[in-house]
Amino acid sequence: MNPFAYERADQVETVLEALSRSPGARFLAGGTNLVDLMKNGVEQPTHLIDINRVASLAAIQLLPHGALHIGALARNSDTANHPLVRQRYPLLAEALLAGASPQLRNAATNGGNLLQRTRCCYFMDPAFSQCNKRIPGSGCAAREGLNRIHAILGASDECIATNPSDMSVALAALEAQVRVRSTAGERTIPIADFHRLAGTTPELDTNLQPGELILAIELPKNNYATHSHYLKVRDRASYAFALVSVAAALDLDGKKIRSARIALGGVAHKPWRSEDAEQVLVGKEMSIDLFQAASEKVVAGARPHAHNAFKVELARQSVIRALSVAGGLA
Image 1 (cartoon, rainbow, N blue to C red):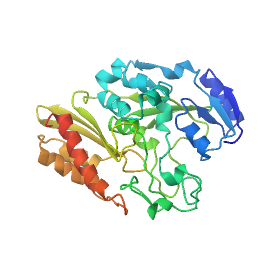
Image 2 (tube, helix red, strand yellow):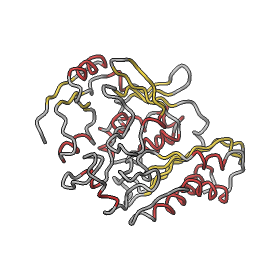
Image 3 (tube, rainbow, N blue to C red):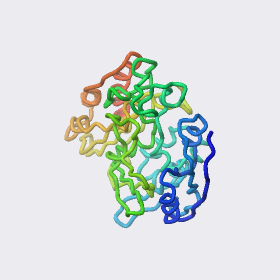
């Protein structure tokens, strides 16, 4: 680990002022991802700004228009167990509780969860010289190497890494908004636009601009609390990243589907929402056959590699299972 400067800030304004003095600085909150990357030599920031004392960023509260405000510094465990989250957005609570271990959830923050970097082994280990995400232009060792955990949807020739966040998959299904701020002012980024596909710039994970700080996540009102489910398929039952995960939510009138949301994790460089599959469901009565038809839409266009072709069928079956549980058919 290289030497770095360290400072603390207790107000949003002082955080942004510190960042303006050191444009390459990184924010430190729970440190559950950044510190590991620093230890491995993947990230080498010269300046850390500790934002844990910015109390205003930890609030979880209902807004006047009915949306739920979840502070960027609220810990994953506090968010998952908050009464408003459990009652109104159980899909998010399920996803958070499926991630990591209790100890890590007690430290990890919502803002940090959004900014998690891939667990691709070729990215995480600087001993591998071919990684376009870590060294732009160097190549992608995963394409011809061990790629069992890698992307089957939306990947490019430059990078086939996957986004590791469970929380972000649920947020994609719930159509969350991410509030950010810089010295230039505030803006809101729809969760669908927050993360990026690899394209030709795999080194960029998000559409955050330099100098922006995540303030909060806002969840709009919806009718999915009663019929939703987060399914995570992994190699072991705890402390493992998803091979495939599915956030499924249904708004039902009896057995008829008024609207649906389907998002997947473990299959792409960003949480993968399938609006085509959702449209297959709208206006129809629930059935396993219908869910099977939707699952085919989800994996349409999949491009598996040597070791992860199993993910195509795994994703399809996971969608069927998640929708069946959400709809009460399983």
